[in-house]
Length: 89
Image (tube, rainbow, N blue to C red; front, side):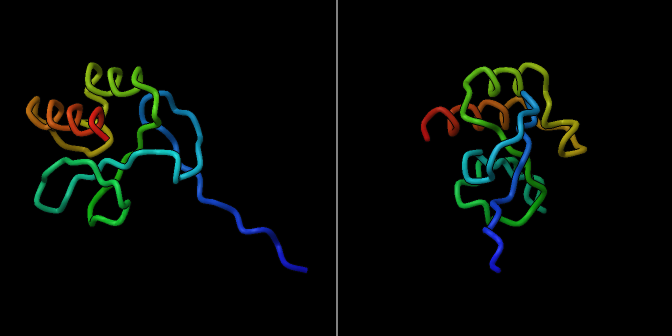
């Protein structure tokens, strides 16, 4: 008997909610150290996920959550660029 295919689950870094991977937006820190949105989910680097709730983006920026997730200092410019990209998607 075939088992139904399970979709991978990922956790939002801000609200800690568990969602299907396809429902979340991936943010990646590339090997070069750039932090950017990854709509394809395939870019190389360390990834973090945000759900579609605008409050989660605000919480992520205000609390500088990505600093801890990516184990590095994410600049204010990176947070600003990320917020612009996230809101325009």
